[in-house]
Amino acid sequence: MGILKSLEELERVQRQQALVYLKNPTKISTKFLKALHVYLIRTGLHQSSFAIGNFIAHCSTLGTMDYANKLFNQMHEPATFFWNTMIRGFQKNQEPIKTLAFFSQMRAENIQPDHFTYPFVVRACANLQDIRRGKWVHGQLMKSCLVKDIYVATNLIEFYVSCGDVRIAHKVFDEMPVRDAVSWTAIMSGYVNQSGTDMKMAQRIFDEMPTKDVVAWNTMIAGYVKIGNMKLARILFDEAPIKDLLTHNTLLGGYAKHCETEVALWFFESMPEKDVVSWNSVIAGSVQNKRMLVPKLGLWKQGDGYIALKSAQRVFDLMSDRDVVTWNAMIIGFSMNGQSKKALDLFYRMLDEEVSPNEVTMIGVLCACTHTGMVDEGRNRFEKMQKQFGITPKLEHYGCMVDLLGRAGLLDEAYDFIQKMPLAPHIGVWGALLNSCKTYGNVELDEYATKHLFELDHEDGGYLTTMSNIYANAGRWNDVAKIHPRSNEIYEMIDEISKRLRAAGHIASTTEVFFDVENEEKERALFYHSEKLAIAFGLIATDKGSTIRIVKNLRVCVDCHSAIKLFSDIFDREIVVRDRCRFHHFKDGICSCGDYW
Image (tube, rainbow, N blue to C red; front, side, top):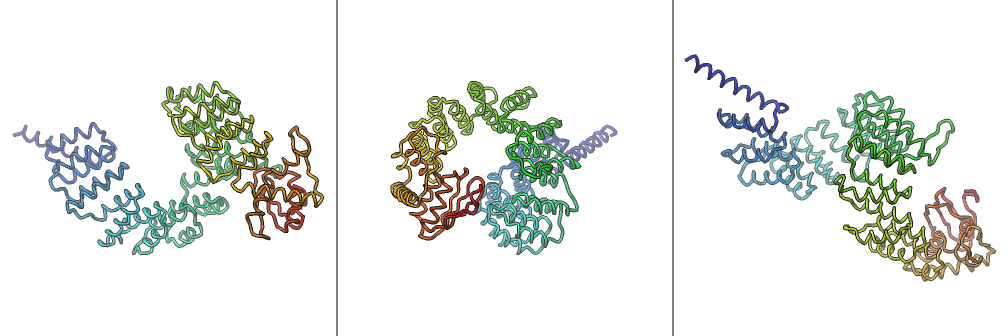
């Protein structure tokens, strides 16, 4: 009798121990879970709703939903609780299609979904961006009145926000009988994160919130960072009663992104806690921002990537835990700033420290080779990408190789490389070849590249301008004239403008034409400058008396500036030109810059 009691006591202790394990998921591995399942069956606990519910939940935590599904299929008429546990498990394991399939099966078996079911179903619709299915679920919620449940309604708001329909999301919010901080933040983040950020509406909602948690403060700070209003972002940061690491990282990332590098470094040093994101923000900011504020001089020092890189490297060297993102930021930073040897040295150091490179790393490495003409090294690295690191080259990598070969003058090899690509070349690949053709004056390949660029994007005329310049450099003026669809009209207007300018006494400033040709040919070349062609097009394509507006990425030359002043007077037009330096407003023969730019 004593032995029997001891066995019963042991069985009772084991059952209690099994229940303890089921309550504590952190102590369970997949192997142990399966052993525990055997024990549950042996002891009869597999018929306990509590035990099986927790067991399926553990399967979800461990990502073994197939195992949970087998167990579920063995159950006789499982209750709603078990259906919900399975649906929640699939959704938490990022399997939205299976989530919705299980939901459909649940309805087919006449099991009534409840307020624990729908939040995960709505999230699955959001993951799939399935607006049609989501609206159908919304309809079912309205029929069952479950839409009034605060948890369900909040998930609906997040669904519509993720699908870009903030208007319906706000309608759901307005109809909620009770709201909490999560629902307020959900609708507020909708206005912050939509494509056209509406911070005015987000601020209004934020101001109306009865209780603001740290998530709400972080959302608003991130919104102002997104639109570049660092002043308001900082004001909110200072006002926030509670700040976590994300609060600090959001503001830090904003300073780094918006070129406030010195402020970013100061803020970084003052942070009470830092993680890899913090370090990466400072490094990326120092690397990418080529404008550094020099307080003693009171002006912006442009193009001084060296100072920025020194700051980034100082932070990088202090880091004890560097991930691949950090390494990439430094490698690309050195590459962008003409320090290719340092970029490659850092890449080799990265390999020595057994950090696996990724696709972005290899772009940085290939760019470093490109900017120093290291053709053999670039070829070698490209060929070993897949063999050594298992990285399949993408279009960006092929584009880097075309750029590498083209810059080195190996245009035929670059062309052959494109022909052998397993992927269809995109604009970046053909654009790299086109730019090299311009450098080396290869008209034949230029025409070929431009043809493909036009097929890929017929609305972008930038490459047509490049081709026009190549023709002009080669003295092929007839070909220059054929590029624009209204070229005949444009060049007729150019001839008319030329006659009127000469009649007005304009003398072309041919000193800015460096071709070894006669003066008459130089004058002709000046008339093919982009702003003059643009004005000619504006004169034939816009109403008489209307303003002609032009944007260019280079400084307007002396001859064009002088000529445009006369254009504005001769044709009685106001002409606005935005060049690299400033806006020029030409009217009645005078420019707003006073001939100083």
